[in-house]
Length: 428
Image 1 (tube, rainbow, N blue to C red):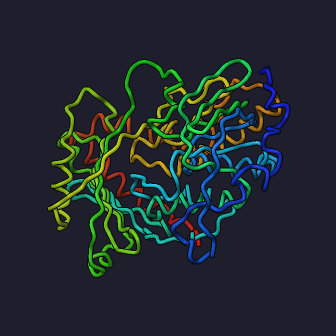
Image 2 (cartoon, rainbow, N blue to C red):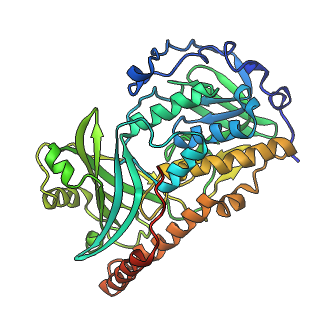
Image 3 (tube, rainbow, N blue to C red):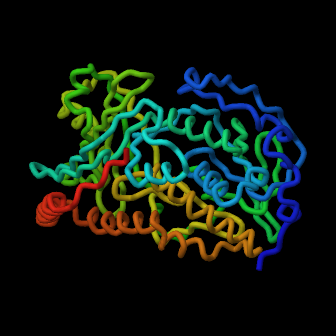
């Protein structure tokens, strides 16, 4: 059994009231969309603080994973509003490199959290995902199969609604250090110090939480990607309005991944989000030349290749061999690992939050904060099964993908399964 810290027994006395007593807690988030429709005013700056604050639960990161954890805890027990705090290093809406696709799996989690679908945000509804390999095409249909958002707008919307439901979020307050001991976790931020019973690491691939957990030796499990937003005219956009393209043909050029092209919108303007994803599941193969491949993909898609400003970032992918938790520390979202097959992060992040909330509630009920059961509960959950299947396909597929003798039969099987698989019911 774990030993409770004073903050645990006090249920976070420093945060006594859901609204009013925590500085800034009742102020709405800075928000671009749909600020004008809701009539909310931008937030005033939060006051600084220097004294130590005790809290039951500290969540590092106000993205989909951290907010999902908080919202699922509130579904379990509304008293969590007074017992947890979310630290966000930036201010919403913050820049975020991401294609912005949310699959049916993630949309269903949002619906179960009480969000009304479709979300009132600019979006591109994708009813058909096309998976290409040379001349073969697998078509996967759904209404929708996924929805593409501009990621800063999506995160800001989720954060705004989390705050309206009672989640305390401190923006522009990054965590700088994290130290775990028998009685709790000490976290120093740019504005002060916190003492928490439990910390949820939702601060991404390069976040402090993941770095504090010593991972098993071996493969770093880091994928690479480059992406670019290309403005298009309405007619060009309309020709591919509800289709997402995934092209695995460049696996013949050492790419352990695919090209993609999604319709999207940025600040109300129609764009295509285009990119190239390289999982690097096996490091024994030569590295693909991502900039060259991206230029080739844009030219093949009849999109401009001049004055490009491609953006790239590493993402940590899921593996059952990774560490997901330690004493008093739980990882979710990119810190725990994205889907390695497609690099999908938003839907798994929402699913991680659901499982994390359950194990955190159980830990506070039992007093055992070791979180030894988190990996098992994760693997047997819906998101765990989702990720394990994708990991297994990626592990084998990206090792054998340079062989046409493997890829051709695989795509033939995919075409057959897509034809006989029942079309899912519309989500709205």
